[in-house]
Every structure is written in C-alpha cells, then in structure tokens.
Amino acid sequence: MVGDVPVGGDAPISVQTMTNTETTDVKATLEQIGRMVIAGVDIVRVSVPTMDAAEAFREIRRQVKIPLVSDIHFDYRIALKVLEDGVDCVRINPGNIGSKDRIRKVIDSAKDKGVPLRIGVNAGSLGKALLRKYKEPTAEALVESALIQIDILDKLDFQDFKISLKASEVFMTLAAYRTLSDQVDNPFHLGITEAGGQRSGTVKSAIGLGSLLMDGIGDTIRVSLAADPVEEVKVGFDILKSLGLRYKGVNLVACPSCSRQNFDVIGVVNQLEARLEDITTPIDVAVIGCIVNGPGEAKVAEIGLTGASPNNLAYIEGTPHHKVNNDNLLDELESMVRQRVADKQASKKDLIASD
Image (tube, rainbow, N blue to C red; front, top):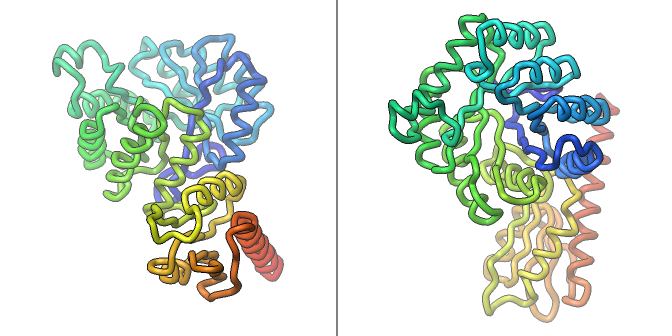
C-alpha cells in the first residue's frame, strides 16, 4: 500500500508523476500537486535532496491527501526525517546510503511505520563497480544492480518494496524488466526514464510501457516527459486506456479526416478534448467526419457523431438521435457528453443508495 493506493497483485495499475518545482517552494509545489490531482494522478513523487527540502515536505504532506513518495539519495537522515513526517513510500537505494547501521535504521523505521520502499535503478546512475564490469549501461547491469539492493533488504527481512529498472533506451529497459520479472515477485514500477519531449517521449513511453504491460509486467507507471508533469498523468492514463487496463475520462475515437469530411474534424476534436479535460468518468465518444465509417463507430460509442450533408447525425447509446448543423456542433457535442456523464453519475449514486 502506498497510502491508500494498493500496488501489485490484482490492484489497478496506478499512474504516478513527479513534481518539478523546488520542493522548498511549498506554495508552487502544492499548486502543481493540485493540478496533478485534478488530472487524476494516483501517486505523486517529490524530490527531497536536503534537510530544508525535508522541512518543506512536512508542510506539503500536511496539506495534501494524495499519497506521496519521497525521492532520497545518499543521506539516510533525510529518509528518517520524511518517515517521521508521514511519507507514504520512500524511493531509495539502500546500497548508496552508507553503513549497514544506517541502512538498518531506515529499514527499522519503515517497518515500524508500515511504509514501503522503492528500489530505483537507473542506467544513468549505475555504481562504479558495475560500470567497470560492464563497460557501459546494459540490461544485465541494471538487473545486477537491482539484485544487489534486493539482497540487502532480504538480509534485513524487509519485503515491502517495489522495483524500477529505468533507461532512456527502450530495448534495454524491456530486457531488464523481463529478465528480473522471472526472478522476483515484488511489484514493478515502470518507466522509460528521460524519454524526451512531449511528443517523442510519449511515443517512446507508449512503446516501452505498452510492451511490458502486454507481457503482464508492471504495477504502477510513470511517463517521464520534458513537459508539464500534468501531461505525464494524461499520457499515462491514455496508455492504460488504450490497453483496456484503466478507464478514466473521455475515450475519444476520431478520424484523421479527409476530403469526405463534412465538418472540421481536427478543429472540433482538439477543442472538444480541451473542453472535456475535467471529466474523469469513463465515457466513449466517437467523432467521425463522414458517413463511410461514422455510423459503425457511432453505434459502439456512448455518444457519437457522423458527418453528413446538410446536417450531421448525433447518436446516443448507439442509436441515431437527432441532427446537428455545423454552426453549433461543438457546443452540442459538449452538452451531450456532459449530460451523459451526469446520467451515469446519478445512476451510480442510485445503485450505491439501493445497496
């Protein structure tokens, strides 16, 4: 459990992101976490590199309910501090925080408070001994690094941890996770680290994370983008949605458009996505520009629109419902989706009340 979020087993795959504000700037960090929560994030990681940052983390922890993971490197005292202040998980490699006594102090505190750890192996920060052995970062080096950290925790009888094996190179990451998944039963946190900008990083992450998830590997994910962390949350849920693993918000099916279109599909879809970003209730919406593929897609969506002349045809629950002209197309679509979401929420409340 990371706070109230289960990780591993049959639990839903959770979506994480990480703040990129200065942790000591409590106001900015809280504002960013608030936007992440609106986007639906399950778990937020916060870097805590100094004692000043640890003091700020205590105030951040006090003001938010979302599960928080602290990112700790080298200084065991910072780990002990955030454990005292209510952290929900600590990302730390026990091998880089010093003596066995220091490691034991962190583990004993984590045990006492029921806080899990994440072993975080990264191709960009492998130990010197492994780099001398393998000459360069490799999947084998990532796995060996993880096994060294796991062995430390095993000897201290601590099993409440998850593992990540991240590289910016997709095939290295895939090989590392697949190799280690045959050797351990602990949950895996997935990511393609330093994946790149919003477009290229999304592509790399979708390929890498999608491949592992299709193998049945992965319990929680983070999409690492050089972009607003809120975009990481959106892309993460889109990846899970495309694989049928999580359903959150609007699943928008739209044609790429062609000369058959009877309205500006690209403009409508982009504006509709922006307008509906606040919706977290799962709903399938199809927006197709012509009558070739439109009716087929609309019949399997909750809300559908097929381009036609002189007026477009709107569908509700797969059934033709009414005509819509181009002048009020966007407003009509948004209204239909929001009404459908309201109906679903009301139905859910009625069901809970009857139970």
